[in-house]
Length: 391
Ligand SMILES: Cc1ncc(COP(=O)(O)O)c(C=O)c1O
Image (cartoon, rainbow, N blue to C red; front, side, top):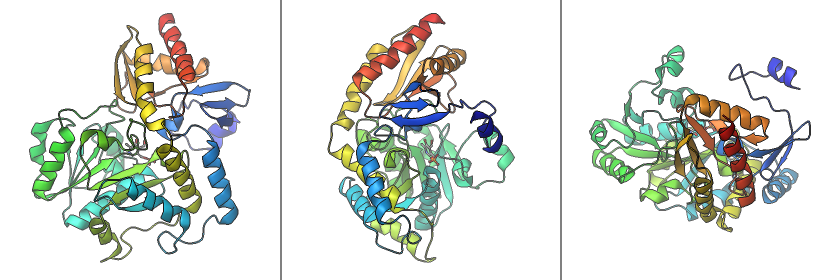
């Protein structure tokens, strides 16, 4: 299969990991040779409830038997998306009430940027250095890495960058600014947590200047950091919340949520300010609903913090210089990029799935399913320590 995979399927790099997948269950992915791989990555924070959680599988099957797709987004009332967006609103602070469902994280970012420009009538967008918000043209324009952007120029104009956690930079937010967009916890940059009430200060500056604050929770959302949404740790409610990834436990999805007043502007003047065929797809909404119900009716979210403590207590080694992040969104910061690289590749040989981070080359990602057990955490950490000892 690998030969055809490399030949016919477009690749993102010359060296894909290339595991030949047979099936997956719980915290394990099984390859076609029958090996069980312990998953410390969860499809890059996407498989919130592990692989093929029974409630998710049942919800998908039940919906598939009823209807799969009936109309473009926003025309018909379909129960999975309707019940889901109401449940989401019930679990979000005011004024976050109305959710627009789309197909991916990056599309949700595009929608949020359009919404901020439409609502404020301004064009300037401020993003953080080392942020990652996706790879379509608008999301890519937010990135400050010229080497990843230059060949795709011209990109969106009127975008400026501030340093995450740097208060002095907040003066760059002015009455020209439509929105500031930040990841609540920076992912690709190395799982950097906001400090010293930074997010509250950004929100206040936005309020003073009439700009909107967009928080990208595509990675930290849905319980991964010990709260349903990471912004709850920092006492800062965004004007627009962007979600995706772990929302549907492994199906392609994204969404953005705002107040009725803000969101309303996308349906008028021009009407259909954002449109999508498959956004709110009933099968994906059913999977999202099952995921949210499991999260709300279990201890998985609070247990995330206990699991963070367990990881941190086990992963003590001279080659691990720091463990960043929160809950089950952790980055091991190694003593060198080489150590990080070798660890990821050697772990693969030991059937433990680890991964890199986009912009911090000393980092090794640990973002397992929230359902991972203590025994599985211990099993994986033992492999990591043995590999580091052998280096
Ligand atoms: C913080 C953040 N924003 C946006 C995205 C883009 O989401 P997607 O890959 O679903 O387009 C990602 C994906 O990794 C992400 O981590």
